[in-house]
Image (cartoon, rainbow, N blue to C red; front, side, top):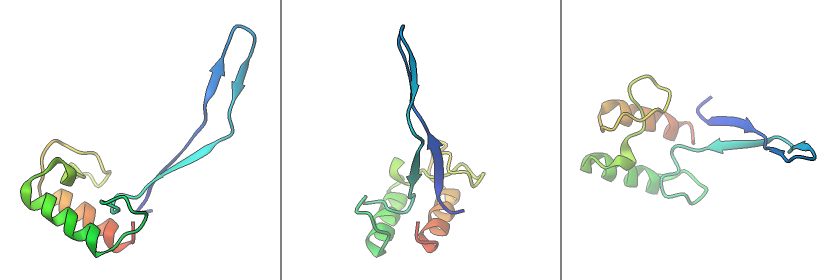
Length: 89
């Protein structure tokens, strides 16, 4: 999948009881750079500007394809972003 998705629940404990919430899914869309709930050319342009400037916003991948940043901006970040952009997320 091109999306980063995981399920989480919350466990709250007190001296009287422990309660677990229902599971919620967290879905992160890596290509929605401007966070407007859509992936379009504006996201591509904003990412490319950040990439060209060496901005931390463009630090998307360390070369493993897992979306772990490495503190630098290089071709791995560009390839990671473009694959997700092409997939629509």
